[in-house]
Image (cartoon, rainbow, N blue to C red; front, side, top):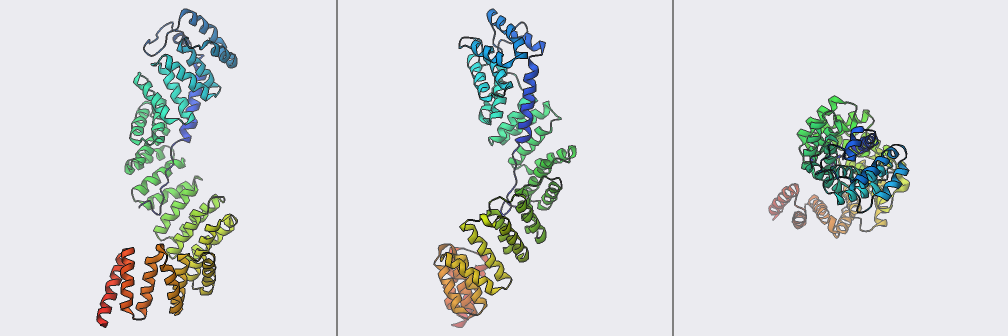
Length: 455
């Protein structure tokens, strides 16, 4: 199945990880100061890797020793003291610690600036790169997050959280192959984290590796069958695999789980339309309309048109009526005109000629260049046997570039019904030049043979 008329539902992984990551990161920061091992390493008394951790002078060590207790009890006071200590010629440790204090108080922009200052003083400061990366994720600066995580990994770091968030950053910037690699590393280090598996599935999906994505979603669903986003992503993979019915089954499950979205319901309706199941298509479109009454009218109007074009007239009429009840007072002039056109199309299809003519005449009065209304009026009068009026409206439509091919075809059909084959041939030839169609080519061939036979 192609993406037209079905628009694929591709929800980018953000909320689950973006909510979880800050919690993990903040917990890590809050617990950091109570860790005796960290305090010793932080003060440089043992185990410091000089390649990735800045040293402190004896004086700076004394200052940090006094600061440790303050960090655990009064962040505001610690912040004020660190702001005084983090001078241009002071150790990067002060800037890094100040960044942590800002981070704990959710002063993200300030924290990022402090980490950048620490890195400018000590470019191989691994923990500063990591924290700047996490801050950048929180701020939505994904290119910076990629740079910082990558540098941290180059310096020998890289845990499951870092690789997972790096995968998220790559996913957000459209680097899907890199996202796949990062997520695979995250899964190796944190195999029980379902968000990393979901991120991997999304990166596979965005690379059009639909079969792999669907298989991975199957594993996710087995682990947690109540996660609507797992079913939804697998449904999108099924659509990519051109397995629309399997996608519809998933969408129905998402519906029951309470995870339906307007876009998903519209896509489900499109699937049912393609399968010829009009009542279920109309129900899906109707539910999409009710789910978000303040939505723009463009897609609901399109849904009515899809049903009408496919011959599901009763369903189209019911949906149009509900559309006008729900959002009719918000229709702009263009949308009102489109609704009138659909009313006319439905009236013509139901044989309500008088109603159709009334609506169509109203449309032509509003817009004399409404080619579709002119064509529908021509069709109406052609069915009524009023060839003169029909030809009048077809000729008016023919002067509009967008509708010229269809108007010429309609005129030719009217002439053929009158056995005027020679007059119909040039109209058909021009219509075929403007808009080549196999059906018109066959029809032109038949009319040309009839014209030759009359000579």
